[in-house]
Each structure stands twice: as structure tokens, then as C-alpha cells.
Amino acid sequence: MKTPAKATIITGAVIIVLVIAALIVVMLTRPAEPDSTSTDGALPGARANSHVLDSAGTDAPTLVEFLDFECEVCGMFYPVIEQLREEYAGEINYVVRYFPLPGHFNSMNAAVAAEAAAQQDQFEGMYARLFESQAQWGEQQVSRADLFRTFAEELVSESR
Image (cartoon, rainbow, N blue to C red; front, side, top):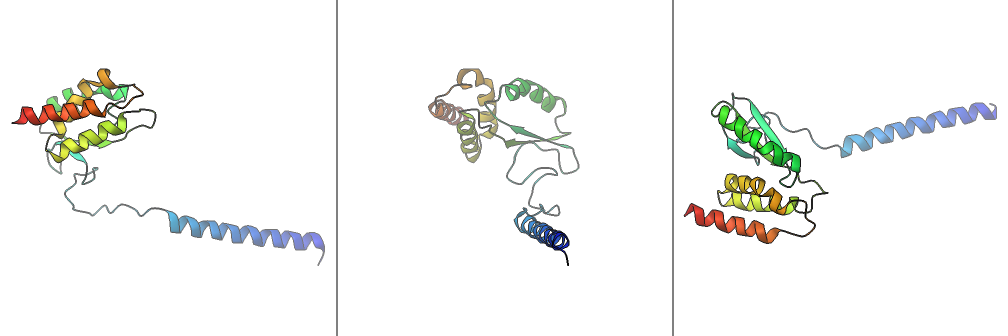
């Protein structure tokens, strides 16, 4: 067999082996598909650990908002969402998920504050407070965790 033919056969064999190896790696490392039959209490289209602000039941449409409390567009959209929640009260499920963007210095601190408030049954109050005060703390390159603690203290005192 001539050298060019041998080189072609060897090259073809190497390519086949690499493709098979790549397929094996992809199959072993891809995340598992979510279990769509799970009945862990989550509304359709939402995860069980999502924050449900409005629940109209599993047959109602579910609006899931992925938000960043520091995002200016999310802040501008907040009144629209509140209007939709009011207009369609009892007809839709409204669910919130965090999506802090890396370019927003305080977005993770705000999400942590909201989650801490949720553990105190004060999520919706903190959710509103963070958006309504966004101009006060957003787009700053210093931590505003102290301000978020103040919001939490105010929410606790208001609920008493």
C-alpha cells in the first residue's frame, strides 16, 4: 500500500476515534434533563424554590420574571409588572427568580437581602423596597449591604 493511502486511512481512523471520544464526553458531562413529572409543589414553568408572589393555581398561566434588583431596565419594568399583577389578579401566577448580573456590584447583595427577607416571610416587601429605592443604591461600586440591612429592620418593625 502506498504512503498517501496509508496516511488517508490513518487520518480517517483518528477522526473517527476523536468523534467517538467527543460524543462520550458530551454524553457524560451534559446535565440531566429536568424531571417534568415532578410534583414538588412548583407551578408549571417554575421551580419549587422560586418565589411565588401571585398564585392562581396550576391551570393558570405562569409568568416567571428573571430579575436583577440593580438592573435599571428591571427597575423601569417594575411598575408595569405591578400593573399586570393588579389587572390580572387571580388569573395568573407570578413567579420571581434571581438573575444577578456580574456588572452590577450590588445585585448579589440585593438578592441575598431578598432571600433573607423571604426566610422571614417578608419577600414581597423587600422585593418592592429594593425596586422602589433602586436609584438610591444602584450603579454604585461600593457595597450597600448596610442599606439592605436597614430595609430588613424596617420591614420587621412594620410587620409587628
